[in-house]
Image (cartoon, rainbow, N blue to C red):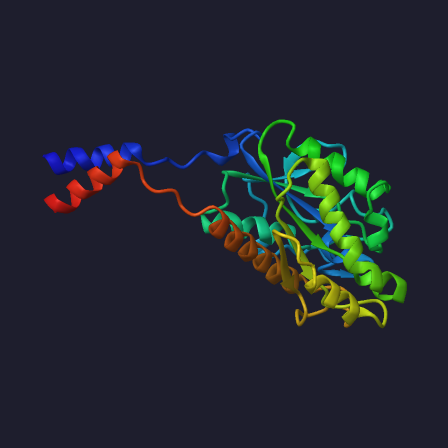
Length: 285
């Protein structure tokens, strides 16, 4: 009888799963998705037309929201960057949806609802994202709006640099510009230790791809993680990740985030009363 009572108390003390569709956007972790075409998503895009195929890892969920171009929250679905990327760019599958779904499956997302803030624009150079540019201002504005109703920003996911492989001057300045971007966005958002997960280039438009990759790997700022896309399959043979590669990249980004979260926020110890209850259960069993 005592054992049954203790088990009932333990069950009552355990958190019950939320009904995700009813959780307001205030209870969310927000992720900023920025960079150029491979972040915006070209998976399944051939001849500037998306094939419409959505892998199971990219399926919509009531627990995954998207901030629309007009700054409203809606259920996220592919193509995530529709209306965000340039109008003449066809968008397809990117890493955002598989990233979010992988976090939810892990059970360690940090909140019952995830908010994705797509900001990437194809064909952009790092210089186009510097503080004072339209792209930077738009990214900053969208990030701020995303947490106006509550929640927190979990990370900036950054995949960019293919356009910086064309000219030596851009490739040579990549590391400095990336460092400034990280410092500026942290300062302007008031999050000095904001996690930034940058993707190492899998491809490039010019001859300086390796120079940019070395600059990416050389960023030594705190809480800047590196996820390498090199070796993932390219659907057009030279630039854009395939649909399956984007799914794999989303999983890699999720694992990087979870590794950071587990290290930075170790599981809190159980309260004393719960420890006593568990001990009693163990003894009486």
